[in-house]
Image (cartoon, rainbow, N blue to C red):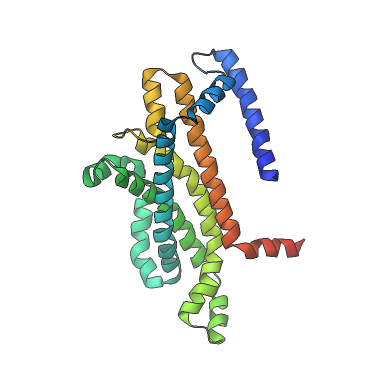
Length: 252
């Protein structure tokens, strides 16, 4: 409830600033927030809107799931296995600064104009963030914990499950939450080109037609998608890292 109250308070402040901006710039450049909210409420009752929203939600959820399934295990491997890290890390850090969105035309050429190239592009972008943070967290684990576990008879697989994963998981989940914002930004760019489905297309199509209310409806929907995705990642973090809450509670 506290989180909901904070969101509502922040929303009220944003709407107030938005209204002031609309008065200063005029309705044509910046529609009034109440007009946009009415248009948004109307859009919620249309199948066309939900078709765009559903396409965007599917793409971003599939992409982030794929990114996690690949990047988290790979980050653990690079952080724990010196030979693998020595061989693969130079490739990771050489390609990490590359803005992945520039690969969209290449992905569209290789994989067609459907969902696959967009999902892969979002997964690639967010996967790097998860990979780099997970590697650093696993690499920074004090070796005495692993040595102590082995001295008690723990196998390498048990050490992975009970020491390495719990040590790296909190930072990796934080990276996933940060990556959720990046994912929505890349989603918008990926849906602005060579597609007729998704909130990004809805926004750009409305902008091209000069329909400000529909454009801002799409912007609100994509913002809501971003908030929902972040909250989902936060929920997953709380569920998968319960010991952190217990530790904090015991420290009070």
